[in-house]
Image: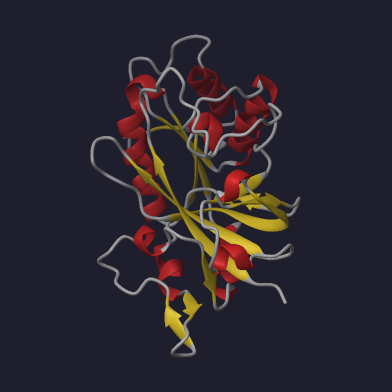
Length: 266
C-alpha cells in the first residue's frame, strides 16, 4: 500500500555567496542538466521513525518557505512531489537518500497555507491528528523531521486543479532587484496564481549553492516558462536592461510574445 509523507525545506534568499558555497549535506555530483525537468532526489538526516518507513513507490511531498535577508518571508508552498524509486542509507548512517522516479515533479510557487491546514497525520492515541496544530507557529516547526500523512487526498485534489490557475513569471536582476521581486511574488501568490520566480524556481544547487549548471538546460528552462506564462513581470531596476543579461533577454522575449508588464506600472 502506497504511503505519503511530508517534509519541510527552509529556503533562504541569498544576495551574496561564500567562495565555496556548496553544502556537503545536500550536494552531490550531478550532470549539468539534472534537476531542471524534475527533482532527482531528496535527503533526510533522520535514521529512524517515518524516514525509515519510506519504501519504493511511496510519495514525499516537499514543503518550502522562502526567507529574505531583510526579515520577511513568503507563505509556505509546495516545492515538489517525490515519487520514490529507491532509497539508500547515507554514509556513516547519516540519514537516507530517496531517489526520485520519472513521475516526480516540481511545483511553481503557490500559497499552500489552506492545504497544509487540512492535512492529518496518524496518531497513536487517536485515529488521526491535525498536522499543523497551532497556526500561530510556523508550519516548518511541525515538519523539521519527515512525517507520515494519514491521507494525501487534499494534495492530490490541489495538484489536479493547479494547471487551471494562471502562471506568472517574475524577471529581475539579483544585484538590485531582489527585494522588489520578492514583493511582486508575494502579491501574486496571495492572489492565488502560480509563480515562476526566475532563479528561485530553479534547482536549489543553482539558486542557493551556485553550483555549476549547463547554459543550455538553464536557457531552455527560462525560455519554456516564459512561453508558458500568462504574464511576465519585469522588475525594472537600473541594472535590469543591461545588454546581454538574462533579464534583458527575458524582457525581449516576453515583449515579443506580448506578455510583458513592468511591476508597479499599474
